Image (cartoon, rainbow, N blue to C red; front, side, top):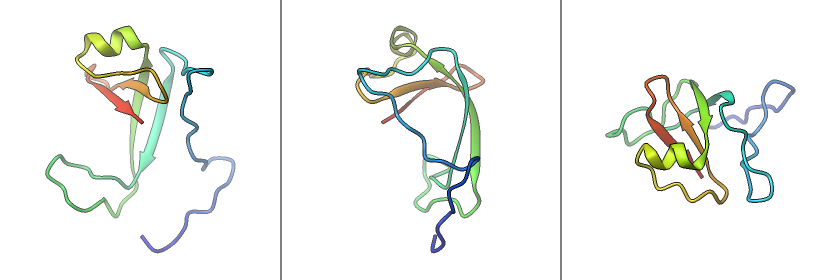
Length: 87
């Protein structure tokens, strides 16, 4: 991608949680980006993608098989309940 996206009220970088300020559990959030859209993809998407998740606490994240460390990460569950970590 060659062009920068201008930041404005509705377009901002996400602030990740810290040990002093953990993420709120059960919050619904929407994430967007141009990342890889398939496990076997080698190039990022040229089209902005988005997904809606619900954040989960450390216990729920661990119960769903992740390696959640609770330091600068947050755990999110998709609509089917699959857990994902964001560093």
